[in-house]
Each structure stands twice: as structure tokens, then as C-alpha cells.
Amino acid sequence: MSSGKELEFRLRGGESWRNPYDSYRWLREEDPVHRVEHPIYGNFWIYSRFEDVFEAVRNTDTYSSAQGLTPDKDAMKAFEGNAAPIVMMDPPEHTDFRRLVSHLMTPRRVAKFESEIRRYINKKIEIILDQKEVDIISNLFKPLPSFVVSHYLGVPLEDRELFDRWTNDIVAGNAKGDLGNQTSTFELFEYSAKLFEKRKSNPGEDLISVLAASGEDVVSAMWAVGFVFTMITGGNDTTTGLLGGMVELVNEHPKQREILVSNPTLIADSIDEFLRLTSPVQNLARTTTKDVRKRGANIPKGAKVLMLYASANRDQKEFGLTAEELIVNRKPKRILSLGYGPHHCLGAALARTMGRAALESLLEQCPNFSVDVGKGSFSPGSFVRRYECLPFVANP
Image (cartoon, rainbow, N blue to C red; front, side, top):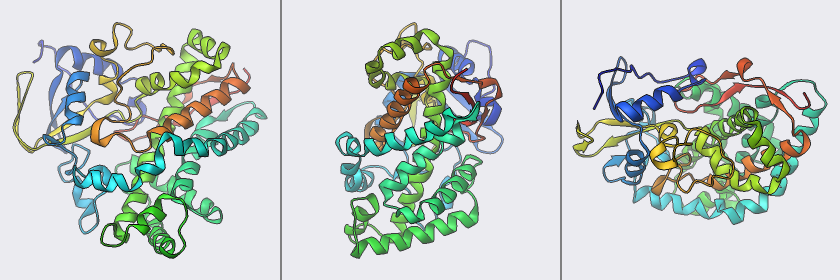
């Protein structure tokens, strides 16, 4: 498998997220099925090529999500006595629960909410334009997905400020590898259970109402609470990662920026290219349900396999010699940034809409914006690459 050179793979976080791509390239070229001996998690494997990751994420019979999505073999202990999050289920159970809510997150349904998303973005940009330099993360890219998630969950307007505080605490804590601020987590769980009960008799057009209407024999209050937690942990920092990564790439590629500024109609079709290169969820793990033979490696049943989505999305064998370059009119046919197959991201249409609306508004109102990536800082989490702070100047 290896050419003789060795790479000591490490789970990243914080400053080490600045450039993980050299190590990804080495893995693809030299050791695409790489064995890691981790001091905490023990042995696990890494897939770094597109072909291998693409096949694995669609094959839930062999690569299971039910034992957690990190290399930690004890990951599911955190959910003992509680319902597992939907992302940690396999078909057919996963399919059944997904079917309950997926109709609320289709591109057509999301389009009905787009005007509100744009109004929110434009209000934030108005404030940004009045300042010389701002942190674009705390001023726009972090609050935007929180606003969208709270809307889809049906959180009443009067509770949004409190919900945002819980969200910020939990996302920050989750990035450090725990369940977030314990007080905020407990308060959110308690609030979500009460909202679930309230929606049984007073439903709205939101995800909690859909779950409440399904009946306790289908969806328990505990499972609904877990779904809220999944929406927060899965829908916030990932979108923040996409948005921060987009302005980083625009800043680094002036010719590509010029194409989008001169022809804004191209922005919609460029979003998947930004998703491909940013790959906010850089990696997630699966567990093998049987022995696997892959590129000469023998992977035993019960092993953890880390899928390097961000590496696969830059594979020249799939995307050509320019795979690591931003080409806004590339229109990649297959990307792994939002998963694939049974676990394709429920919020894919929302993520694309937020990305498109934010980039269109920024390039329209401050087309020459700049970001100081050198002064930016990254979240400590090992699975989502996102800026925690990114200085932004609207009119340099």
C-alpha cells in the first residue's frame, strides 16, 4: 500500500485545519487505504480516494452508521437510554424516520422560505457595511444557520434569543468533543420535550409538529428531542463552515470572483463547486459489518473506517487535473460534501440556498470585499472545518 514514506495521520482541530490538503494528497497518492494506530481510539482505517469513499457511503450493508460516526468505538455510550440520532441509524429504520420529515426540506419547500433568508442576510449586511472591519463569522455566518434551524423546528419568535444561546453553547461544546455546555444541553432537551407536547394539540408547519403528529408509537418525545439536537449540531457549524470557506476561496481566486461579479446568474450553479472544495464535514466514520478486502488491505469486521470526504472531493481521478482549483463553472456531477445515498443530507437544499443567497448578496453589495485568513481562527472540532473568527472588510 505504501511507497516507503510514512505519514503520521492525526485528527485535526483548530490551527491544523488551515491546510489539511497536503496530507490528503499524500494519502490519495501513496496510501489510499491507510491504517492508523491512535493513542485514544486504537486502530482505525482511512479511505481517501473518491471511488472508495463513494462506494462505501452508499453501501450501508457493509459500512454501518449505527456505531457512531467517529473513530471512537465507545461513541454510542453517550446515547445509552436515549434514542439514537437519525444520522446514527441504518436502513430500514433510518429510511422510515427520514420519510417523516423529508417532505418539509425539499427544494420546493425551501424556496418558499428563501425570501425570509434573504431579508435576514441583507439586514446583517447593512450593519456590516457601516463598519470598517468585522468578524464575518459572528456577524453573519454563525447566526444565519441558527435562524434557519429555529424556523424549521418551529421555535416561536419570543424564544429565538434563548434558542440561539443554547445553540451557540452546544455547537461550541460539540466542537470540543463533548455534548456542549451541560446547562444549555439540559435546558434545550427540556424545552424541546415541552414544545413536542405542545405541538400535539397546537401544530404548525414545522418539523416538530410533523413528528408530534406521527404518534408516540412512531416517534417518542425522547426521539424528537434527539432530532432537535441533531438539527442543531448538524445544521449549524457545517453551514458556517461552507459560508466561511466560500469567502476564503473567493478572496484567493480573483479571476473566479470577477466571473461571478460580472455574471451573477452563474452563482447558483457555482455552489456545488464551493461545496466540493470547502467540504465542511471533512470526515466521518463508519463501522464494517463484515471483513473487507480493499486495495490489498484486510479490514476486519467491526473496524472503524474514516471516510475523508474532503480528500475524495479533490481527487484528480474524479475531477481531473484541476481538481484542487476553484472553477466556478465546473458544475461537478458527484460531490460528497452533503453525503450520498441513504444518508444524503436532509438539509441539502437549505445549505445550497443559504450559500447562494449569502454569496449573491455579498458580491452585489460589496463585490470587492476582503478577508484576512491569516488572522482567522478555526474551530477545535475534528470533523468540521470551519472558521471560528474571520476578519472581513466590505470595502477595502
